[in-house]
Image 1 (tube, rainbow, N blue to C red):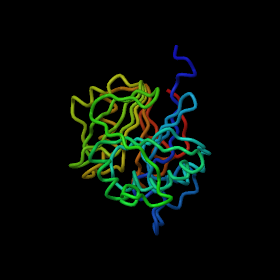
Image 2 (tube, rainbow, N blue to C red):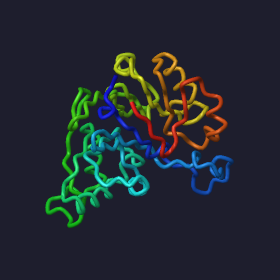
Image 3 (tube, rainbow, N blue to C red):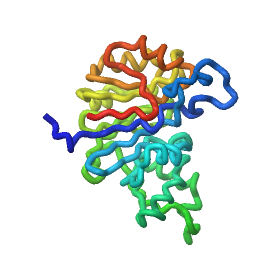
Image 4 (cartoon, rainbow, N blue to C red):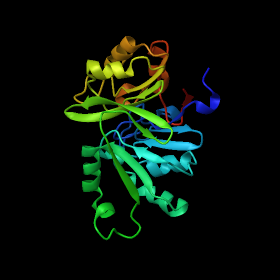
Length: 260
């Protein structure tokens, strides 16, 4: 049996798509729902073990997510890709720099890190702007790597024509912003006890899995448990959708914590 101290604690910081839920100016039944599980920040998770915290993606809600969960220290930020809903909160890392007197390691593919440099030029220009985040950049490839005591296996998925990384850590796999996973990359996931995968809405989408497409993948991989994330208001209300899902499959929601 896995020692309790070695278990991964996964905190879902955000489970919404790029607009978040509720959507600005929308009065649909999901956006006006009073159920807290229908309120979704932009997608992000925190992986914790032994006092160390790794954040996967820091979107525009990053500051609020850190305050809400009272996260006083982070060891690194790992990026899936460089779309704004996954990187826009990068500037708020500077609070950790100032208070903890340390730089923060960030990890991502070389194209992701290049895009971050382009979108946050003031962080990286010579004679760096005073008060800008202090970051250590670490490029990764589609090969296993480690961040401290965490061992990651990248899973390359396609987000329309963009290559995006999901990650497997032990028996846990996290996939977001995908609409295709090749057979060879699926094999990296196979055997995971817990899988998190994106399910944007019921109808097909050009760059995200629909609910049925995600369920087909999960039916093939057969994890013990699965959680759906990167959810839009088009998927429907939490209480309604949750009741219709297959056994062992659940809608993730902001604040959900699981152990693997």
